[in-house]
Amino acid sequence: MLEAAKFKHLQEQERRNKKFIEHVYDELWNKRNIAVLDDCLSPNVVYSSPTMTCTGIEEYKNLYKMYAAAFGQSHVEILDTLVSDDKIFTRVLFTCVHTGDLDGIPATGKEVKMQAYTVCRLEHHKIVEENELFDELGMMQQLGMELHMKEAVD
Image 1 (cartoon, rainbow, N blue to C red):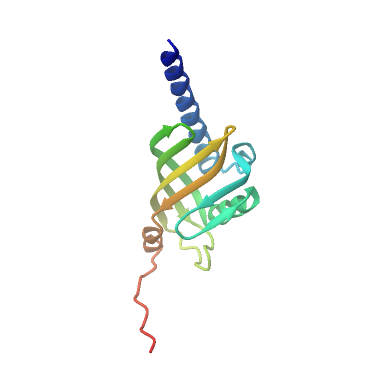
Image 2 (cartoon, rainbow, N blue to C red):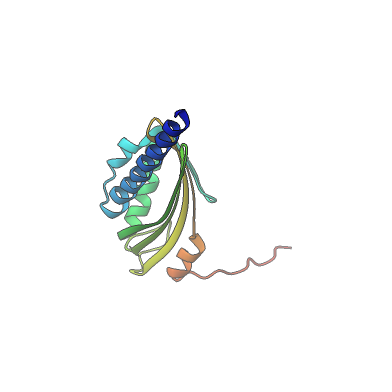
């Protein structure tokens, strides 16, 4: 009987965590509600991707604001969600329009579609750690950027 109760508890936790992450993505990217971060992030959240790291809710908000300003009319579709204990894995498809400056790249007006893979770790129903991998090269190519080899320096 104890195993059945434990299994039921884990199922409920998985359901709750899946609903939680769906809420975060919908509010943040589909509705552009930055206030959701105050409810869903730990004050000391750590965000990591292959090209950047930020620590704390204010740095996280600044990163979000940068991307939100660069990409208007955004929509996120959750393609997959897997939950294991305190971790949530998602595969999402972002569709947006490049309407503002992105790190020196002026707005192109082009639609961009890119997949992202994210693993979030929760503590006390808040995200304390987020590791994300998204197709930055594909994004840059869709914006019209070209990849060139650096010239050799003697």
